[in-house]
Image (cartoon, rainbow, N blue to C red):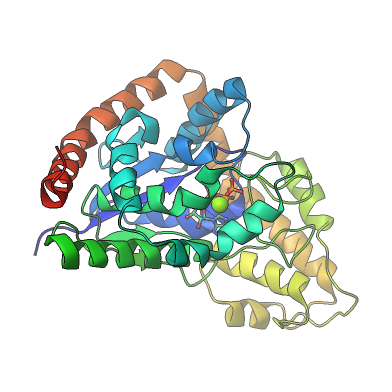
Length: 329
Ligand code: ATP
Ligand code: MG
C-alpha cells in the first residue's frame, strides 16, 4: 500500500480560533509522520465574501505563521497558498461541468453563510464547494482532516469524483474525511447555538490562539451559560456543553470524562476557571513560537514558494488527465 495522502485547507479570513485548532490543526500536526501532508492557505475561498485586499494579504502570512507555530513542520509537510497553484481554479471549472445544480443547492453552509451577507451574495460563495473538491482531488488525497462543518463538502467531493470516474474513466481517488472525536464542532462563546467562526464579529465570540492569557480569561469568563448549576452535557444547555467539549478537546479526553472530572464542581464558574488555565497552557508554546517566527517573515514567504513548487507537478498531472478524459484541448 502506498502512503496515505493528507490534504486540508484553512481560509485566511481572520484570527485562528480554538475551533480551528482543536477541530483541524491539532490533527494535522499529530499525523505528520504517518502520511504525505499537504496544507493549503485557501485565499481563493476567502474571496467568496468581501475582503479588504491589504488585510487579506496580511492574513495569508499570519495564518501561515500560526500553522508553523502550531507545529506544521516544513520537513514533513507542504504548506502553500492556493492561488499560487493555478490548477486549483482550472480543475474547479472542469468539476463545475460535472456537478449538478440540485447537488449544489443542498449545501447547508451556503444557506448559513449567505444569510449573514448583507447586500449581494456572490456566485463564488455558491460554487465554493466545487473549488474545495478540486483542492482535495488534485493531489489524490486519501484523508481530509477537518471539523464537522466540512462533512457535507467532503461528501460532495466524493460524489463528484465518483460521477467523474463513472462517466470519463478512473481519474480520481476517493478521499475519506477524518473528523476528531472531541472538538469537531466548537460553538461560539457568545452564542453556543452558532459554530465558532473566524469571520463572525464580536471580541467575546471566540478564544483566538494568539490571545494573551488576560484576553483568554476575559473571554472564557464571559462565555454564555444557562441558569442551571449542573455540569452535564445536554442539548438543552448548549453553553455548558460547549465548555465541556472544549475541555475534552484540550485535555485529550471525552465529554463523559469531562463530566466526571467536574462532578463535584460548585457551578459553571469552577469549570470556566479551570478551562482558562488549561487553554493558557495549551496555547502558550504556540504563542511563543509565533513571536519568534514573525520576527523573520522572509522565511515564511520562502517556505510558501517552496511548498507551491513542490505540489504543482502532481496538480498539473491531474488536470491534464482530466482534460484528456473529457476531450478538452
Ligand atoms: P470562516 O468563518 O471564514 O469560514 P472558519 O472559522 O469556519 O472561518 P475555515 O477556514 O472555514 O474556518 O475552516 C478551517 C478548518 O477549521 C476546517 O477544517 C473547519 O472544519 C475547521 N473549523 C472551523 N470552525 C470550527 C469549529 N467551530 N469547530 C471545529 N472545527 C472548526
Ligand atoms: Mg468556515
